[in-house]
Length: 137
Image (cartoon, helix red, strand yellow):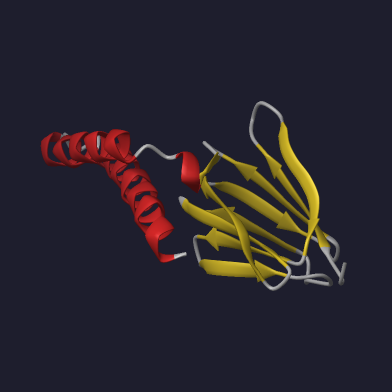
């Protein structure tokens, strides 16, 4: 295999994955970050979205995360993720119901509840975008 970076995906419960990849694209708050071998060291906040894992010049796996943190060194990319799940495993009907409930919660939220309600809405919007992207990849 060509030069690789070791990608680790960790949830609060356990190590989900540790494998060499050509590139991994992480959704960060400041924009998506493509991590290749010999990347500059970096620590960043991960926003809700999809991690794309590349092998043989193409995306071979897509994983939705609800947020978290990423630490990058020259040969390793470690993501501590909230709610990681394969995009293919997301149930569209459940996301639609959750998205509708999140929209209603934002409308009805009091001033001290609004920030949390908006975070939940954003999470559900990104999950729906991930489901919709299945048809485009």
